[in-house]
Image (cartoon, rainbow, N blue to C red):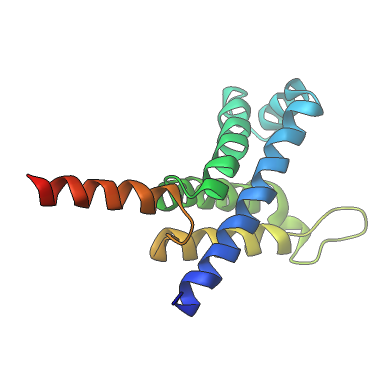
Length: 140
């Protein structure tokens, strides 16, 4: 029987993975140069635009698959923390006028921290790899 916390973690992992995949994809579809320019305007090196876009895109897929969940969640938590501090914090939680607030970023940060602390092994590649590793240790 599936434990409730594992079912909840699966929902968080899949949701977080899909959201970050599409955020990363949007950075490339909208022109990664635009993201590069935005990073430079924030005082960050433009190279980080590529790091963030690839982390969101590939990390999103990996989260859906359940591969490296804790590590990727740490990376995504760092991205969200920087996004809140450098981009959205001055807009307030709910935003001002046309400027978006940081409520979504804060939610994604909380989800990332939960998965970083607790992981998510239900229907995950990590679980399959762990079982294979344990079986190999038992044989030796």
